[in-house]
Image 1 (cartoon, rainbow, N blue to C red):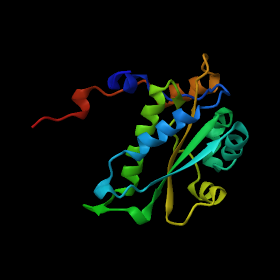
Image 2 (cartoon, helix red, strand yellow):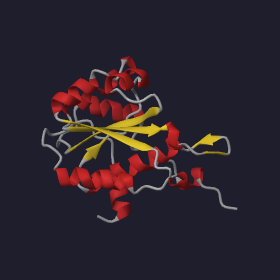
Image 3 (cartoon, rainbow, N blue to C red):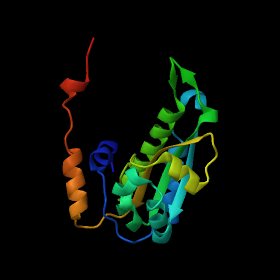
Image 4 (cartoon, helix red, strand yellow):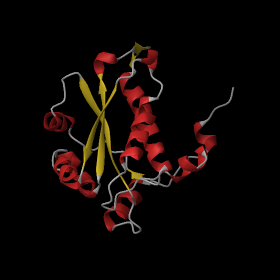
Length: 182
């Protein structure tokens, strides 16, 4: 696919087929994240790959009360937890870049997945404290986001429809609202 087509195709998916993600596709997704740019090439991203519906269901139970909306990840064959190691941070203009760098890397992975026909759903609703404990992450690591990865089902379930409508997922501001020329 052409890049703009991949970008336009990427949507939040909440219903997945049980089919596993082929290992060569997973490797390409992870490689896309590895190749991302970062401040002073610090590469602060760290990824936890959770495979198999038994493991993804267990992960779904450890997202905390705020993460209850994430129960749909239990049906995904694969979930990737995007973490950032604060020890690899670069602070510029009073801003920590390890979180930004990890978000860029994770987004490249999501676009690579879309290019392979996989669905994803960038998720920030979780208890970082509970998730860090469950995954036994080092103290310097922050959980930035997580996403299921899998082949979408044909039909969007009721839950997915409600969340998409609530989030206004299809709404995009026009360029005139977000760009200023000087």
